[in-house]
Amino acid sequence: LFPPERELYQHQWESVKQELEHGKSLVVTTGTGSGKTECFLLPLLAQLVRESFTWPDISPVPGNREWWHRDPARERVAQWGHSNRVPAMRALILYPLNALVEDQLMRLRMVLDDDDSHRWLDTHRGGNRITFGRYTSLTPLPGREARSQIERLGRELNRSNKTYLQILNELQENSDLPPETRYFFPRLDGGEMWSRWDMQETPPDILITNYSMLNIMMMRGIERNIFEQTKHWLSEDGHPERQFYLIVDELHSYRGTPGTEVAYIIRLLLSRLGLSADSPKLRILST
Image (cartoon, rainbow, N blue to C red; front, side, top):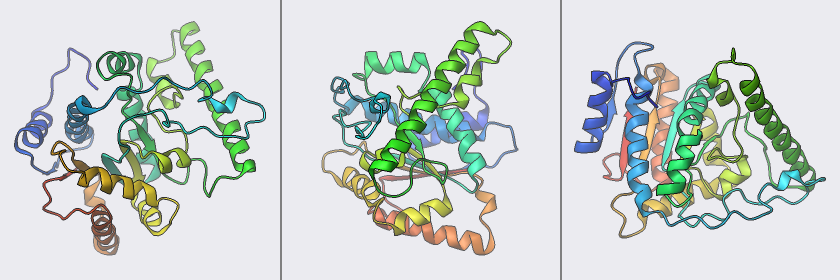
C-alpha cells in the first residue's frame, strides 16, 4: 500500500491505532487527496492478516479451474471450490457511485494481487488469497446459470485474461508505460472474484458496491447466500477474532432523503447479519 520510504500521515496512524489497539469505530474528516482511503484500508488489511492466522491451507488447485479455456465453455467450475476456510464477507465497502467503486478496485489490485503479496500469502498463509470483488451492474453476469450465460461468461473471462497478458507484454517491451497500468485490469489467477455467481457461492473477504445495488441484493433470493454465510461466520462459537467491517466512504454525500434511505439500508444489512449497532463484532469506518 505504501512504498518503503513513505511515512504515514498523523491521521492515518491515529486511525490504525484507534481501531486496532482500542477497537473503536471511526469517522475521518480530511481534505481530498490527503489519504483518507488508507485510514480504512490499513486497519482492514491488518485485521485480515491477523484473522488469516487461523485459515487452513488451501487445497491444490484443480486442473479444470480455468474452465473458460475449454471451447465451448459450457460447464463452470467454482472459483474457490478448493478453499478450506469458511467463506464470508469480512468487509463491505459502500460507495455512492460506480466510478468510486472502480477506483477502489484498482487500489485493491495493487495491494492484494501483486506478485509480492502472492508470494507472501503462499509462504505464510498456505496459498490462500485475500479475496475481493466488485458487485455492481458492471459485474458479470446477472441472473441464474444457464448454458448460454455460462458460455457468455467464458468468453468474457477469456477476453479479460488475454487483455491482462497483453498488458504485461506491453509493459515489458515499452518502458514508457507506467507500471500501474496493469492494475487497470483484473488478474484471473489472483484474489479478485470472477463473477456474481462465484461471489454468491463463496462471498469475497472484501465486497465493494454502491448503496443501490446493496438494496437490490438484500431483496433478491439469488444473493441470499452472501448474507447467510456471513451471518454464520460471525455467529460461530469460539472465534472472538472475527469482525465485520462496514466501510462508508463519502459519508457527507448521504444527506436528506438519500441519507435516510441509506440509513434504512444499513439497518437492514445489520439485521440480516445478526448484528446490532453496538455489537463487539462490528466495526464501522467512515470517511
